[in-house]
Amino acid sequence: MINYNPKEWFTFIFHFHKADTFRKLFPMLIAIGAYSGLIAYLEVDVFKLSENSHIKNIPAMHGMLGFVISMLLVFRTNTAYDRWWEGRRNWGALTNASRNFAIKIQAIIPKELVAERVLIEKLIVEYAFALKRHLRGHQNDSELFISEYKVKPEYHKPNYIAKLLVEQVQALYAKNIISGEQLLFINEEVRAFTDICGACERIKNTPIPFSYTAFLKKFIFFYVMTLPFGYVFTLGYIVIPVVVFVFYVLASLELIAEEIENPFGTDANDLPLAQMCKNIQKHIGEIFQEESILR
Image 1 (cartoon, rainbow, N blue to C red):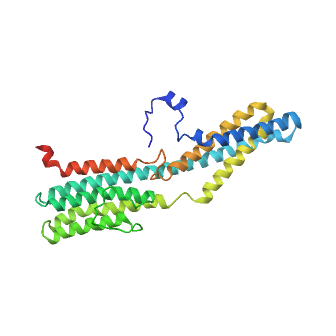
Image 2: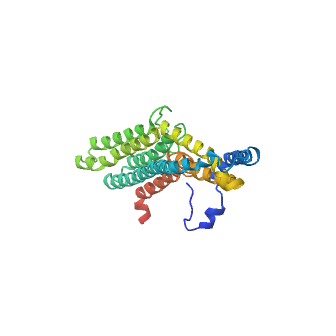
């Protein structure tokens, strides 16, 4: 994710980030400019169309379709941002569930049971890292996963870790280390892990319908391709930068929506999942080391 100061206007205007839409669209902007120049040359210098030509009335179509394309782009960007924001809310919920679970375990399990406390601490932290890898489509590497638990790469590792957490809690209950009331007390956070994983999978595995995305791209393309025909009569060769700018605005909105509709990837504007996992690791470690910190 790109960190920035929203008050620095001049930085935004004159600085082009590597993920900026201008860089991605630059080849197409050059092509659109050349196309617009060709149309202007043919109409003005070759065919020398008069002011009475019916082609001059084409902008009337753009006026009618401009409202439609603007509404489609607003819906597209709002839908993509809603997916991005829901992903951020889910990872915020995961952070809170991890903290709450760690706080309850730290308070309930006696400090003499060091092995049990350390195991649950590692599993809580590893769940966040495993969910990050799961959403990004690679499960072979592992930052913290305990070596004695061997899992096949194709296995759903977040589910496996959640199962281990439930087994550890049930084992403590079977040994009368925790009571039935305490078991119910901590069960909410264990269930929250799986709920959050399912919500993130729903976002990742349910893209915007293909027909909608394809139609919007075609709409933008044909809308821009017809702009030079009518506006050449009033703008002349100035139609070249005008059409390029219109295409840049419309295509940029579509590119932004494409980038943020899956917030769990590695694009510049996607969620900083690695940093969130490290924050969870740091906070859980602080909770389980509270006794030594206070001394």
